[in-house]
Image (spheres, rainbow, N blue to C red):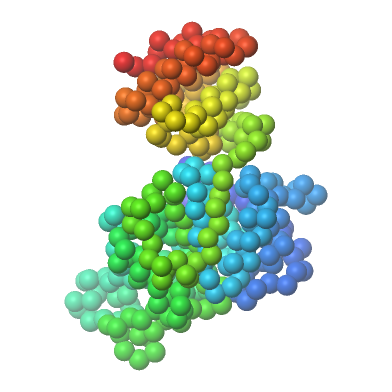
Length: 358
């Protein structure tokens, strides 16, 4: 058995095993068929309950969580849409951990995703020697979810080819998966209570592989918006960056005044309109990643906390990436907006603008 402490990112059912166990033990609410806990307990797991020592895990509209859980208790799938980095995948993971006790029945969508990776494939050595049988069958997440009555997560569904997306049509409407290679009762897998699908899609990918109208009808759509409040976003970035730095062996927590500069910079770049709007996504998730990198630079290079110069160094690879126009926008921001802000860390950020490449 592997040591969970050595895992870079354990699934939610492992990270929050204690909370899940306590919530289930105290849960006396009505549960939809096949669910591991009631809607009320699942909601408390996701949005938090200080009285029960349950942490808040999703920073967003609690009514969105309510609607998502109600949708999954019906025969319709749940589609979470929004900008990249708005915690759609995290929300789907938390819901699956609460409802099914398992969040790892996941399909990662992409141009190379095939129907075999969604439904099932074969152990070809056994297939050749024995022919088609349940022993040579290799179940994929959708078959397992239907057979075991669990939620299946389909990440980035609009990155998949249309014919792969449409392979879900009969599964979501008829709730049965046919295996024509087998005969008798084994040729049909009927979905058990508790099975449903949570899919995610980025609005930036709209038009890449637009979902068919038939498939859209089988989902309820919910939009996950960026965090609107500065202090809430700052607290979240501080909390998550502190966790990541501790896991990376960094002994000093991030400086809050440096994080304030970082988060405000991200929000300014995210909210810019017109020609100065960044083409890349300045999301909260990206801000956490930069805060982590800033802390690593400060600790492992100098034995201290990260500073605004580290912020500039790390922003170049996150905000600009390989886009020369974004690099120019970032430089204009430092030269025209950062310089006008008050505070020692803002002035240090401005003074470090020469660290941008090019």
